[in-house]
Image 1 (cartoon, rainbow, N blue to C red):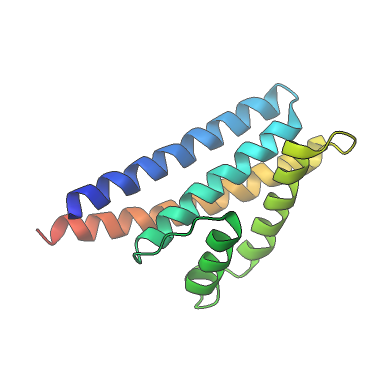
Image 2: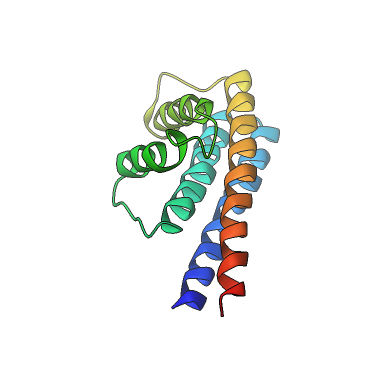
Length: 138
């Protein structure tokens, strides 16, 4: 069971990192809408991984975001400012995915990317520490 959990968490972190890499690529290519979309998904995947460390899963984006706020932001495990960044990332993801007349600017996408990089780095470190403890409990 622990091995399966570690594998799942590792796969989630890898997907988050791949999403960040794709976000950077889109940004460098001038595709700011999709850069913001991928930045959001990078954060979404690490939030899911963090929640899984507590045995929690959610079927909707809103559930993942509110669960992350409840279990990680409110208790102070991560800075509350992450909540504002996540809200902006989600709004920009919706614009990037569904907006036809509205588009994400270069500056907005750059800010989204910076926020995503910080959140992914911090949350991934938390998840990796959890996995390390799990490995030591054999």
